[in-house]
Length: 221
Image (tube, rainbow, N blue to C red; front, side, top):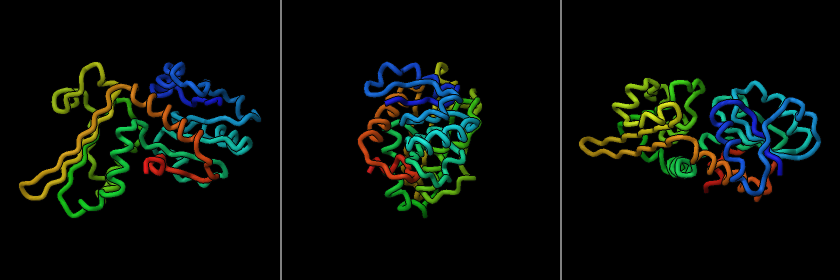
C-alpha cells in the first residue's frame, strides 16, 4: 500500500527517514500532481494545512483513508465521505494514557487541577494532546500552562539540551487538600512517533473503516 506523506516539517521528515521500517507499505513524499491519481492509498498528513484541499480531493475520488497527524486544522470538524482518522498524538504510550483519561478523567473534575504542556519553541499549532487531556478532565483549555522558553524547559522541566527542539511534555497535577496525584509524560525526539504511526497504519489496514471521521482513541478501546 502506498502512503503519501504530506508536509515538510520535522514530523514528516522523521516519517520519511524511517520509511525502511514500514514493512507493509511504501512511504512517498506528497506531490500536488498526485491529487489526480486513481490508485487507492493512504494520506498521512503532518503539514500546516496548505495542501489539505488536494488531499481531500484525492481521498474523495479514490476512497483512500486520510490520517491526520497535525492538530487544530479543519479536518477535525470535517464530515467526510472517506475514512478520516484524527490523531491528537501518535506515541502509543501517550495514546493509551489519553484513552484511559478519556474513560475515567471526569472522576477528577471536582478537584484542583493544573495542566502544563511544553513543546519546542517553533511549535505554532495548538497543543492538541493537552486540549484532549483537558477535555477528558473537564478542565478549561484556557487554563493550560504552555511553556516554550528553552531556559525554563531545561532548568524546570529537565528537557535534555539535545531535545529542546523536538520534545513533548505534559504534566497533570490533581490535588485534594494535602493529597496529590501527578501524571507526567515526556516524549523526546520523534522515534516513538514513527513507531506509533507504523502501528496506526497497521490498525487502519486491518479494519473495515466506514466513510466517516474517527478519533484514533476509538482504536485504543
